[in-house]
Amino acid sequence: MKSAKHLVTRLTRVPGPVSMKCLLLVGLLLTAFASGCRFDHDYTWQEYSIDPERVTLGDLPAGTAVDIVNGQADDESFDMGKVGAHHYHGSLSQLTDAVIEHLKLELGHRDVEVRAGAAKTLEVTVLNSESKTGMWMLRADMNVQAKTGDGYVLEVPISNRTPTTVPQAYNGAVALAVIRILNDSAIAEYLSQ
Image 1: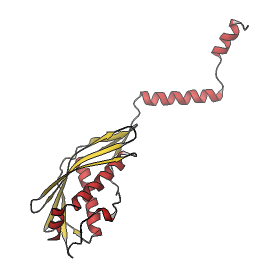
Image 2: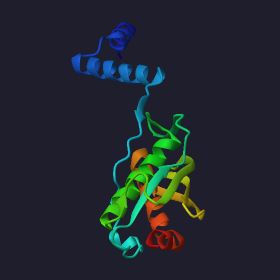
Image 3: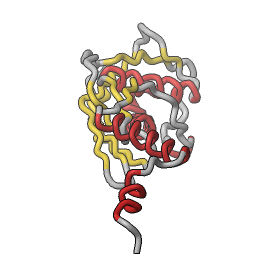
C-alpha cells in the first residue's frame, strides 16, 4: 500500500511539456469562445452558374435593349446568417444589385444589350430576405419583384438550400430569382416586343 505522501506528490505533480502545451491550447480556445469569438464578413455576390437549359427565354429580336433598374433603396446592413462563429452581413440593395448583375450576364448570353436609357425597362427589387440554419442545411429565402416598363409586376418567393456557406446560399437564391424572372412568359413577351 502506498503512503499518503506519495498520493499527494502524484496529484500535485506538474505535467510534462506535451501536456502543458495541450492545456495551454485548450485554455486559449476556451478563452476565445468565452469572450464571444466572432468573425464578421460582408456579403459579396459571386456568379452561381445557370445551366442554359433551365432558362426558357427564347431568342429575342436583334437589337433588343433593356434598362435594368435597382428598385430597392434600403442599403441598411442586416445579419444575413451565420455558420459557427462566421456572421455575414449585407443589405437588400446589395442583394438586388446581385440579381441585376446576374440578369445582365444571362441577357448578355442572349445578345440583349443592357444599358441605361433603353426604351424597355425592368425594375428589380429584393423585397425581403432571411436565412434559416438547420442541422446540416442552410436556407436563404427572398421575395423578389420584377416590374416591366408597361406595368406588369412579377413577385416570386425564392428559397435555396445548401449544406455549405451563407454566401453560397444567397448566390444560389440570386440565380433562382434570375431563372424565375427570365422564365416568366409576360416578361419574355415584353422583352421580345
